[in-house]
Amino acid sequence: MSSVPGIDLANRVIIITGAAQGQGEVEAAHFAELGAHVYMADIKDEAGEAIAQRIGATYVHTDIASEADWAHLMGRVMSDHGRLDALVNNASIYWVRTIEEENVEDFNRLLTTNVGGTFLGIKAAVEPMMAAGGGSIVNVASIAGTRGLERHVAYGSSKWAMRGLSKVAATELGPKGIRVNIILPGIIDTPMSWGGGTKPVISTFDHIPLQRVGTADDVAGLVAFLVSDASGYLSGAEITVDGGATVGIPRTN
Ligand SMILES: NC(=O)c1ccc[n+]([C@@H]2O[C@H](COP(=O)([O-])OP(=O)(O)OC[C@H]3O[C@@H](n4cnc5c(N)ncnc54)[C@H](O)[C@@H]3O)[C@@H](O)[C@H]2O)c1
Image 1 (cartoon, rainbow, N blue to C red):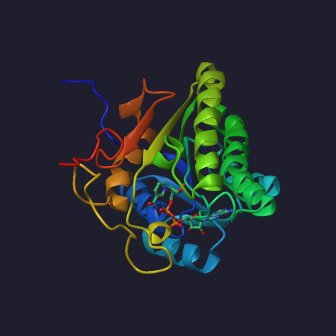
Image 2: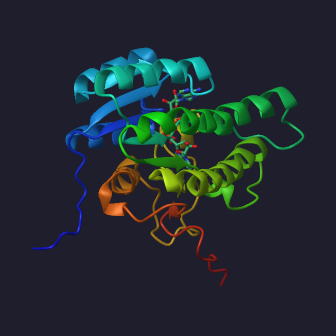
């Protein structure tokens, strides 16, 4: 009989940020289906509470940019379970502006949330994960952190920075048994890509070999793998989930 681990999250204690909609919501539901104790962290309390009730998870109001909120969330998890097995730093804010349109206050606010919030999450998770004998952290970057995407000055900078932060964390925390991996989604069908509408703002699939945008389900399977023992020797990895968008060059003839 094989001893290859599968994706089994039974009784795993998992925090996911940005879980009140989009990818985080779908991932939280998937983890719960796989048997995990899921803690959903977000600032959209009404939606978060309703989803948590529906999927059998626990919602805790958490602004990822607030160290006090992280302390409150970890306090709750530790008093319930005495350990943390996995953290998905999924929450981010996003807007599209040129360098000339962007202002320093908003630039700093975006970095404080996306990068600072991920840093605070990693920092807050170390002790609770050591209490579990190790853990898995997944940081959600973007293909905007692999290129110089126009009109993404603040967001693109934050996603590049999250990759660097994740590499340092993987190096420092590996000896403590904590794995840190990075995913880089392409365009995923969630409110973030809708530009205020109801479907992704995209005019052509020419640059996407799989010829479609991604779904939150596409990402959830990958993240479940990364928080499970099936990825036990993976740390510091960066995995694109973009339908191949960043590997090819669109045909011009
Ligand atoms: N949708 C895409 O096309 C796409 C592409 C690449 C990367 N991503 C990344 O995927 C992740 C998930 O995005 P999504 O598509 O589900 O976006 P989304 O906008 O639908 O959801 C983001 C969630 O994060 C929450 N959030 C925002 N600020 C927060 C804060 N300060 N504290 C706690 N929660 C906060 C929001 O309330 C929301 O529930 C993000 O890191 C995003 O940058 C998304």
